[in-house]
Image (cartoon, rainbow, N blue to C red):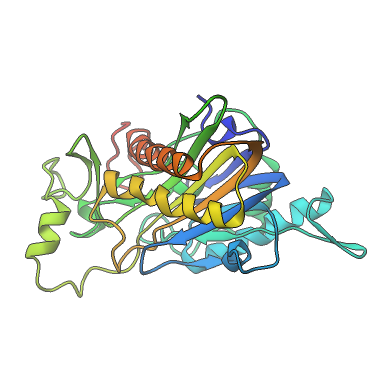
Length: 315
């Protein structure tokens, strides 16, 4: 399994700053992809999302960018646009080529160096590094500074990152997900907490964020610095309406693997990309998308190493 690049026509590249602990991930669809999206969190940061609406005249996107750096990280999308323009990829508007590049960000300024964020140059580097090889997971790209379990503050959190997984549907149809996991909640596997808020700085005993949230009265100290970003791709043919439905159904994977999830402190969202011509029922694709997202979230924390004083499961 290569992850998201199991889908023909999709390339993935990371750019990471391991000193500042931030980065970005470029997902290229150079031949264009029909796209839809769905936002469930209450604290999202995005750019060019409306181009994926079924009501928008744009028919295809050419890349998606996921970045750290909070709102500053949106600048990385400019670098991806510049890279694609130089390759002549985008909509032809007279003598000008205009690449369509939606972008979503997560907050990683609480770890590493808060004054260093993804730039246009970093976005361009991620796009230039994009290949159809197996996708690197863990603390890379948009997941470089990602963390989970932050209801008790960063000192009790755990490291996370990027994960990816592919699920087979019918015949040759595949659905794959890439997720940058930066949740306020805990990551769950088989009903048990795998990574999340710990009871103390030196402890590996979990506080159980969902139960903590129910018991805690004063939430003023918990900041809106969390987001899980998912991109789902398939080689099935979808319309924009169908891609939107797949993005909605993919959120079932968030619910299976993160608790609590979709809170007012998270910016959780999913983008769905259709990059093929194979036939499959939209609901089957959506169910597979949920499975792929759930597995990718687990893989993201399992592959994450300790960084910035925050412990990870991979070290």
